[in-house]
Length: 538
Image (tube, rainbow, N blue to C red; front, side, top):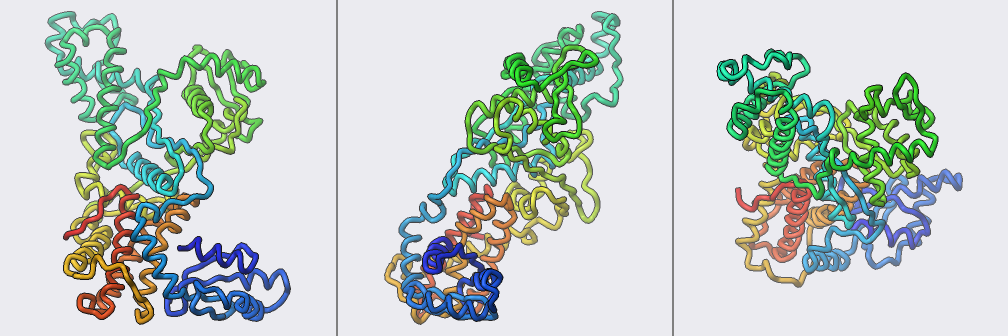
């Protein structure tokens, strides 16, 4: 709908016309401020230019009325055009959203939380944002591959195994003493240190390891590597389950350990491109030459690669796959990391402008107006699964994209239960529509005449047809909050029309039913792109 009107205006006026939606549909279905833009070019009053442009548009059959209002050009669509669009949408529902322009191949990486613990609420926000972005992009016709990067190498993985090892020894303390007097040659402390992983999930992992491997694995610290691999697999299984409970799945899981074999090749490429130097027995990346605030270590004096080195290898792996665009969704604390990654991409010979990094701010949860308690299972943070258990996946997903990802989000879980949650209002609108459809005898009639239809209903129809444009703006601007805003507004407009007019038995029931089908289609599709199944009964 939006692009049909814009194309008509662009062609008729030989301009790139900006289209807006008037707040009052009685003043037109669309409006354009093109006269204000041209007034700056031609040094003439906007009203005068608007009247001249209206003359050029006067014979367009798709428009029933065109008027100048305070320099704006307001356009009302013709009844025949609305009928035509209504039939097109209802006969080809699958083509309602998809765009034919500017399709891209996109690699979208998000979540990528270390497999050393369950997903927390911060991970959940990035997960919902990434999955929703992928759903919308695919609906618009882009080819999007979603990817989770598994950091299954490095010191944090060693620390997971050590944490399980120590907890297991504490659980089996007396039995181990009987076997080996605690194997004192390992010089391992049984008390937790600050950097050990904490929480009941570590106890659970230790108990599972005891059941799987038996007591002997906790005798010798050489077995910590086995416990690390065991812990990573179990945590990755739990992460996938948490994601599945939120209706989120990935196309690819890429293991850091699996691609680490490319490290020497990557370092050689960087060396040949004059991107590295050695100092203090460390190898440094000259990232300051590419906009970073300072150079970064990629290989420690111990000859062990840094966390950055692993990420450089991963981005080398990404760019070898030749996508048009690469999108990373990271936590806000990674802001300073962007420049060094982009520097490494440039040094590898690729175009770093193809990488787009979106930052997801943290979430603050309240319960009855007070800070939500941390999870004992996690140790020091709120679990994603806790939020799902409190308010459900649908409400969580909806709330997490009601604000831009890079802004702080705070909400009270008690204020989002039952009829208080915003998605209830939208589902109620859709359920009302389906109740009406079930009662109408004209649901299958396909001959419409909008000439006697109130402007209120026509305005609702045009607004319901705007979903493709809303999705396009939400995706291109990475402003996903536009979708829930639109769905709430569409539902509000429907409820207003419902309360203002009789439907069943109305002489225009057939036409109204057609409009309600499109409203329901937009609500259903809109929620689908948010990972939510619309309700048809309440």
